[in-house]
Length: 287
Image 1 (cartoon, rainbow, N blue to C red):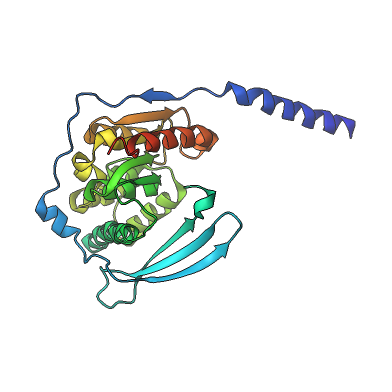
Image 2: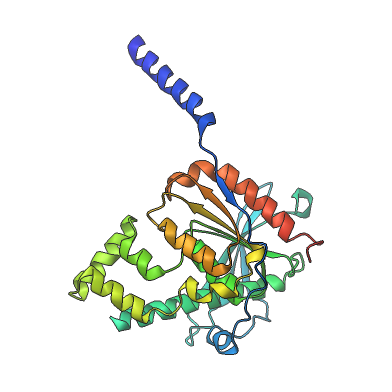
């Protein structure tokens, strides 16, 4: 028993000694010569157009604590003519006193279009809230949320600042080569169902997928974008993040020396840098 305690103590000491020795992050400043983003063509805006939310929506409280309440709103999905599907948004409300085959690919294209429209409807709702400054809306997305966020930031000018973490462009490549278990299972399922090789599925996706972040990246304002990438990421391969960065116009970028999931150890650092970025980009002086 004493031997076991000694081992545990040694392990604890090793962890405590190792934590301060975490390698630092690489910070790449924004390219100073980059101009304004290209305007989004009217035809593209029409693709992602939806009726604006102007009426009151269903809203209820899910949970209440001394510091905040979790509330849910439900909006009728503009992309569902039947009216059955809802856009559901759960958010934290803080009291003022507390602080401020081609068929499959067609379905995939439709799904990504719906994602953008759903988020634009959520922005419609935010604009109606009396305690929200509609001129200072920021977006924070991680992994799949970062990929969705890149599309929304490109296609809706109401996003004034974006922090996109563990993100990449070229989704066909990510689908083909990602090491993430869920993506691998989906990849194998598609291969079996279509009796095709992985490369054939990849080619079909590259030929028919329409809504890749790289396609719209030139409409993102690099001056108001911060990327966080992981140098050893194989879930969203690192070079796909580099490609997205270049397509946006080389915005500010933080690179952590980890993989996708091991980047968790840098959460405090990422939170601080993201908060500072939002403070700078969403300050009233910037407006």
